[in-house]
Image 1 (tube, rainbow over the protein chains, first blue to last red):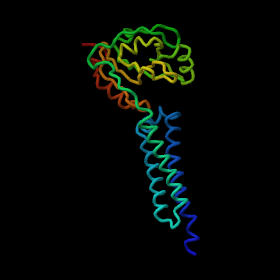
Image 2 (cartoon, each protein chain N blue to C red):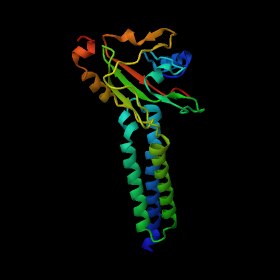
Image 3 (cartoon, one colour):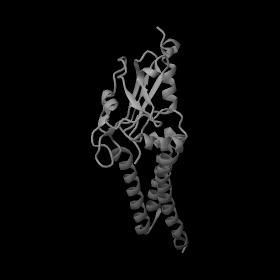
Image 4 (cartoon, one colour):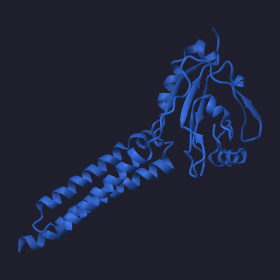
Length: 141
Length: 96
């Protein structure tokens, strides 16, 4: 009798675990796409997101361990593991790039003459006498 | 610096309210000069720039670079500012 009353709360535990995992993953992409400029370390390392995903996994596992009937908590745990695995793949497999050398430290920066957003020609020499940060990026699509 | 056309960059500068120059390098001349071509890295397999930051001092010497191995990872502003501070006043102004 007591177990019948408590079983839904165990599903709740597993569901909460899955929810935490999903919030961690979705939260990462919200940060990466919309707030990356304000939260660069979250975008780079995803530590708060991994904490959420880890907590979620722990709750899901706890739910399975404590449940007498493990089908539903087990399915929820499986889903949660899949979410964490997909997150891991997105962060560490899909976004890995081929190596690039970049310019050598201590060497003169290669000259360039390119047009800016106002069609004005900009040259490396224009920045003599002041530090210059050149940021290369992939472009908009 | 990006392979996009100046019009695309003008849109971006307007939307994101950027006041620094965004240089268009569709032929990847500068990208190649800096060793940063990502062959076939674009959405349709076109060549684009590898995400990277290069700090050049006032005398035109490369002093610091950050070339990422993962396109979601970029240097945080504090790292860039520390690199600029590391140039020192003489190098910053380009004086010997």
